[in-house]
Image 1 (cartoon, rainbow, N blue to C red):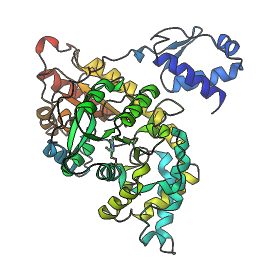
Image 2: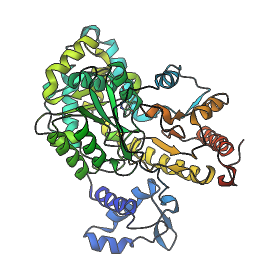
Image 3: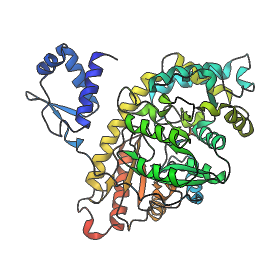
Image 4: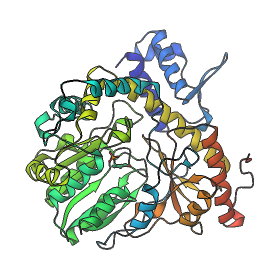
Length: 481
Ligand SMILES: Cc1ncc(COP(=O)(O)O)c(C=O)c1O
């Protein structure tokens, strides 16, 4: 990391932490250079980075100022306290959302899809085509149960970035993170067993709990601080929970990242009650801050953390390439991998290993993080402008998903059906709960942010305005085309 990047990072943390407020004047280039013992051009470089990220703006002859749109949005409140383990419902909602074919006429703002139309993925396309033309037929052969060694080597190397020392032999390559999570659940829990989950939660994990005849214990989760450790402790005291499954870094759908202290406290709780942790890190590499946050796995001393991730959000979901580090559950996980898919498709693994080895992954991530952070800011501005004033919205620390909470009378399942007729799709909040909670919430994707996205968001705002209590409707919604 260069000096100017480190300085930019420090300033970014101060701005996001509220030390500098929107429209505040920042120190002059000279002051900052003196205070940090760096050159004027280092400070200028750092300020340019922050300008690119739209965190600050330069005013001619006046200096640098925090951008006005940096005001914090009103966050949704923490959900209700956990009551008891439940069977997971909502399959119909999830099925409806995931069975649709890609359709260029539909503005699908509900899915967890990254931007795949980016020049930094071109080398990946080249690797894929090179691999498919290889004459040695490796790409057409069965892979081993663990996955291609060259890919596992690269994954182990990248793991240092989130604080983990992993050996390639500890890893299993999977068909997406989804398979990793479902292997993990079956490796640590029997049918009828209870898994504690953050709530709202990734619906794929919830549906795995349903499919394996397990029960979900939904733990209330704060959009800023993450899963409630107090509620989790209470649940662990009361119920024979086998595992805690959560996405503690750049959470889907709430966007928060659990602090290191809270990650450690959660790990200590898992040790005290002797339960496994299934850590979903699928968005972790898309954290806007640098260096990226460490995983809970990074302080796993006794192998109870099953770390699950994939290249679906960082590269492309169509690769169907994920991986897991199942710790002490490696043998059981290998068995579950074997009975599920035997092995993972080979060619994509070879191509992704080449892409990373040739040094294309980090520049790609840098570009995507900056794009997603810019888009988050633009999306929050648009929402502040166009949505009813009572709307509460998350403030993601990474990734490309926003969680919105509307007035309680807004039924987002009905809203989605209405919007579908207009060629727009959202993810209704009920998908993210075991029992259909969050009916007045929705998730939106901001991976791309073009005119069509703006129009779709403006239309969603109008429809929500129509469904909200009239007195609370913002009188100046965005003009529609
Ligand atoms: C939090 C979370 N975990 C796991 C997955 C599944 O990832 P994959 O597409 O790699 O199976 C997703 C995808 O939407 C997700 O949002």
